[in-house]
Image 1 (cartoon, rainbow, N blue to C red):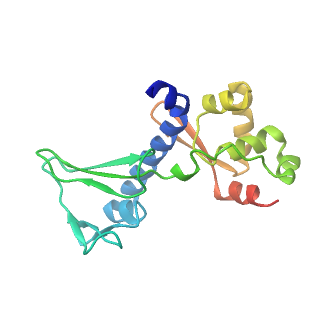
Image 2: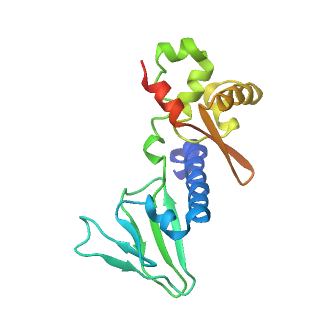
Length: 189
């Protein structure tokens, strides 16, 4: 059952999770824990060297204690929009949170780009821009759009040089995603 339900969508789900992990690693490297937790979830806040759960779901601010093995962050694509904390065990504390981009996971590429975007970029490039509302690899895009990976690569190069898509390496894969400029182009009818 799992193969029938999840397997067809796994490349997109995996791309969203990989993109989130890459983004969080960059945030941590650039600004430490304060920057890492600044936009992780509205209920999580970093104060005075401690992670706290605060917000309407919590009666009062709760400190999140690390286990001896530290704190593990786990992005979730298929689950609750809330933060879930697996309290300190003998090894670590796990913080499960919704991954960035999960909101577009099921809608990316399902809308037809506006006629003006198609006239400006062409049908394939406009389709790529729409599909990349959620991160994807060249292979995933080629399969979804029914074009060759080399054709997708050529179109992505033009879109990237124009500032409409961005790419980031995640392990052996390169993930592409629509930039703010690209999203604004898609938003104009």
